[in-house]
Length: 75
Image 1 (tube, helix red, strand yellow):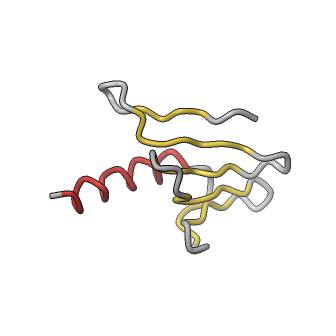
Image 2: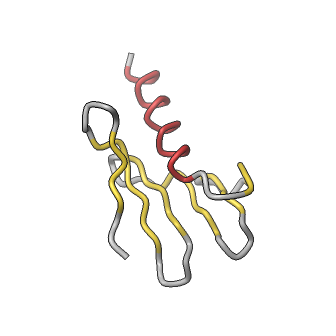
């Protein structure tokens, strides 16, 4: 399945989500780095380290969070 772009309110790409053939959804930041994954069979979203962060698909939120962290570290 093709990647979905996630953009901010100015239309800038801040990340992507893509789904593989097993249904897992991967969230990546704008540089292509993995920020998390959602497994629809277990219904759990994990971060890049495999730690459970939520029940349900919040991969878009992980991308937004990674963007916020990028801005903080850039200052």
